[in-house]
Picture 1: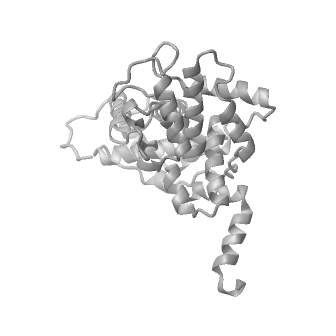
Picture 2: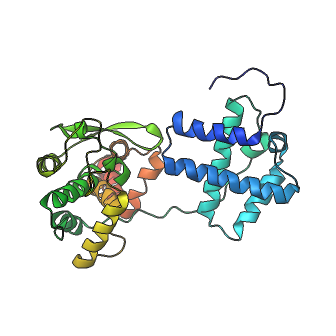
Picture 3: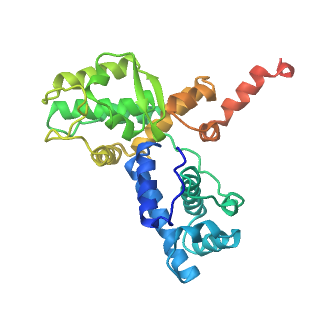
Length: 311
């Protein structure tokens, strides 16, 4: 972001916050839910400052805050927020202060020196391969319309057979599924990746396209609701909730768990972590490494295979 010319008077903080929102949405290409989370975290921090400093926050106040002020905020959170929530709020603040610096409003050295709360990341909870296959096979079984059953089956296969997030699957447009061997997916933060499609996934997409009763326009949503509008993630979540009840699966059997199953099946089959990271669209390898907690035998096998003393 280019540094603007010097300003004659301090800018209004509300205006800066709106600029930050626009920056998240346009330049960082953050999802609407992410933008709302960041701005809600920032509003929470400003509300704390009103009580902590006993006056309305201004830009000058934000730039002069000390590390003691930020620690007071984290301490304020500790009574009602988990370590994970506190870490997320601190991450939102750091993103805002990075924006202030890059936009030429000023910088805070104190926040950069503050360490966030430590928390252990819970390991992924995949669905067993047999249960995942049953979910896909039974998708749409209780639906009256064949095209709805084909739609749900295609979506679940994109999660289990291609590792897509539910938001990524529902963001696909009609021109993405024209018999292609791979999809170009735009994930979190606007990061793009190519995901190969298995024959079963391509066949499910083709079956849905053949049965869907709505006209197919290139940039329109691929997956439609009953009235033709874009499909809500909530509809797929409800469909899986009904399925897992009928199949006797635990509540951990969610759309995202199918994505976890995709990753763990690749890991068991010998795929390396870097490849899995690329397929899933993880920004950090440490996120992908969480799957080794699910299948630690993979690491042992790789060690025995690679280390010269194991031969």
